[in-house]
Image (tube, rainbow, N blue to C red; front, top):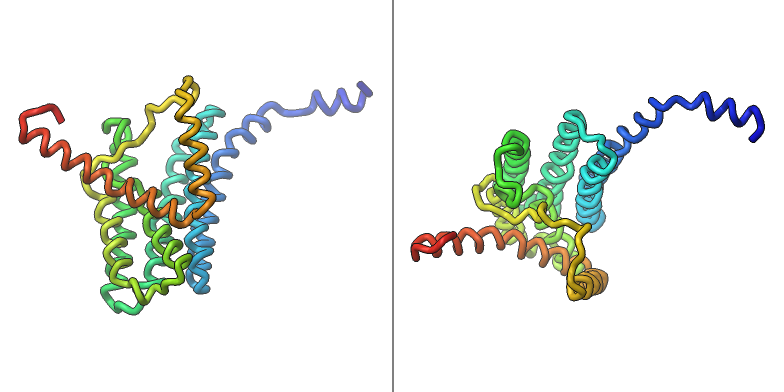
Length: 254
């Protein structure tokens, strides 16, 4: 190795490398924030399909930042707060504005009231999650997670546009789904989190087959598959609550 190369190698500061790893998860959070902001801009420009897709992109990026932080051991209080602020934009403000601009503007005050209920629900959901993170059962979310609520609203917009249906034609359906998502976020309905799933363990072969089939369905019709997926997930909490109620009345274990 030439002497000048050795000298450059010696001058590398290890602290710079640590800072680079520390910044990495926050870069994903920033990218998710940008996707949420981009969704708002596209909704203002009446490009609602782009706005809906941007919310799903924000979901993917939001899921990556926490995993990157855990893999690189760079979790921090700053990252957690920054992630919540990013979520408020991407999964609180953006879906509410997209739904309002696409379908509910013609409803007058009822339209913006529904949009505000959703936005306030997302804010309250994120605040409750941050304060209860150490005391709740890790297997379940308390209330519908804000990314899932955002996917439900964005998926509705995307599938309707894909079917050639305008927002004016389904404005009351959009009104109902927006309010449903907003109120479910602040409910006490429990939703399965899947956090105890260990991807490092071996799984049966049929799980891989199911994953391949799911990818096939998703690639065949992304808007329909995503909307159906999050609609079923949103309903699953109520199904679980009903089942527990019935079990209690029968004297069984919930």
